[in-house]
Length: 210
Image 1 (cartoon, one colour):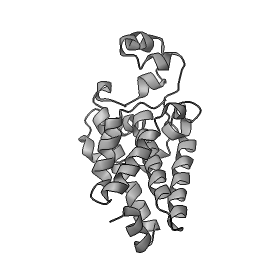
Image 2 (tube, helix red, strand yellow):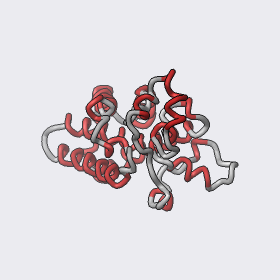
Image 3 (cartoon, one colour):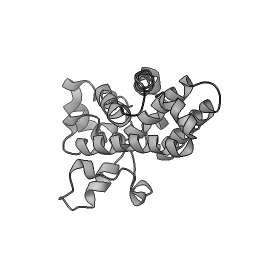
Image 4 (cartoon, helix red, strand yellow):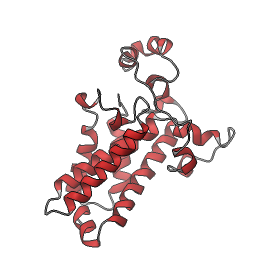
């Protein structure tokens, strides 16, 4: 049940990609990113949002979408590569809003962490930590959580490992939110750089549409 407000997915994607992609490519990538939060993707698709401790499934989903990018660029097509990359980025961005990765990173500093831009989005021992987990969806309470007047009541009934308690989807969630945004933006840049390494210069140029 992903609810990071669309504006943040848009802002992070633009910050990471705008210097590198044509306007039309960026529009399609962003649209595909936002479509991942459609109603039908909220149920039975934990891998898209890293919900319900779907850490391995989320990682496999990202790898699968990256594979679609590569496969599309081996053909004359291009649209499918942009759509797959938008899907990939949404899941990569949700990782930092829906898991406790940010908390694990901050815990290393005993209450005196560096500022958000200094977060390492892929620290190996944290990505592989047995303590890494994501919020579980407890229905109907986690659905009622999104109705603001009912939120305090829903939180009283939700366990601490719920999506309602764990999510870093909005600034309302407190001082960890800027770290989630910084990590997700850096991760978006990382995913582009990874494709730059995997693709030939000609394929990468076609992908960025520049």
